[in-house]
Amino acid sequence: MATKIDKIFDSFTKESIFKNKFILQTNYTPETIPHRDEQIKQIASILAPCLRLEKTSNLFLYGKTGSGKTLSIQYIKNQLLKRAKKRNIPLKIEYINCKLRKIADTEYRIIAELIRKLGEKVPATGLPTEQIYAKFIEILEREKQMLILVLDEVDQAVHKIGDSFLYNLTRINSELNKTQISIVGVSNDLRFLENIDPRVRSSLGEEEIVFPPYNALQLQDILKKRANLSFKKRRIASGVIEKCSALAAREHGDARRALDLLRIAAELAERDGKKKVTLDYIDKANHKIERDKILDVIETEPKQFQLTLLAIIHLSEKKTKKIFTGDVYSVYQNLCKQIGYEVLTQRRISDIIAEFDMLGIINAKVISKGRYGRTREIKLAIPEPLIEKAKNILDESLFK
DNA sequence: CGAGATTCATGTGAAGTATACCTTTAGGCTTAA
DNA sequence: AAGCCTAAAGGTATACTTCACATGAATCTCGTA
Image 1 (tube, rainbow, N blue to C red):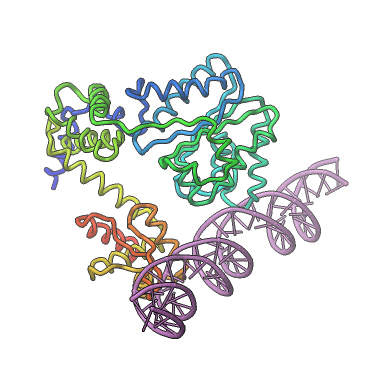
Image 2: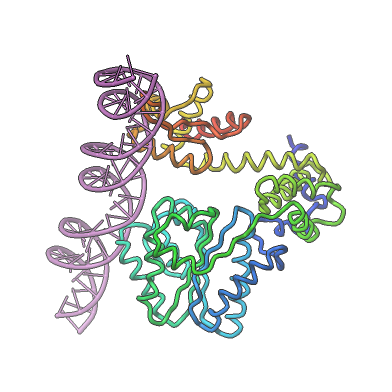
């Protein structure tokens, strides 16, 4: 045992593959952002007036995951803040990711989170939403300033809670005297603005910028630049970068995916005590990412959600037949009785199943079986080899 | 045979309920003058 | 009398339930050729 642990420590104290691992991590904002010059220029010119404390147009950014939206807006945020600081301009830019559950997935929570970012405390519940807005406005009115509000993944929030909060936000300017507020919406869904309140659409979509996916060559370029900074010399076998790019390009040009692949591959190689990242580690990394992503979601889900998922897993193991809501519900009921959990109604389970669909853990489609009614046709979207692990996690968290 | 009507199993929206938590307020107790 | 603490009152957000109506194609019904 001791020797095993020694080995692990050895591989870490021995010289590392990395020179600076941080550079490959997802929250790192690089000095330059290749292949996004056009977009950055556009965003910059749209947001520039805020340096003169003029209200800028609201802005909307579209693009698939890993196409550089968040990165670009963060980059510009930093640049603007740097300048603002130098010249003492009261500019604030707040970034909120609307997808985060329990943090920013209701109107109340979004505003509350915003207030917290501005450095004030608000209770998690109990206040009227109206009052939260009032407090928000009050904070803004304390001094003359410019606020740019970045709402990442707004489509998620709107899908869950509707677009009224966007309307309220766009309207808030009319209640402000000293401060002006601009909104930058970020969305993965290209058709997002089509389905929302026209008033919001015209206000929020004053300017729109599309981020096209990176192609394989661009991905390679990005990876090379980052790899040079992040790795020591000659630690990457030939073809590794190319393979990462190719895999990520297949996933609609997701640069984040490409970087994760490279970083995790290197971590795995390092853990094995290797000095070079070779091609086979890319495959391992690919599996690991997929696994971690799914298992992590499963693990952090609330109990009732986990029970529902377990019911679906049981069903998908047993029979190859299609799974319907009714089946899931009866298995779920049995599970609840078995473990001694409270049984929720089918209405609620229906919603929970819909949420799993959104998360991509399952694929569910509403179908009509004619004479035999209407239901969701459910398919588990967890890769075969992961199902056992998923089950273990669920058992672990439910049965103890 | 084909057009409508029917039917089933559940989707889906609206309104209601329980719970946890917040602020306000009134009363009671302590304290200092 | 002023100050402070506490508990009750009154209010909200959230997760869930209840109620009621909407769906939509397979199947049934029945008039017609």
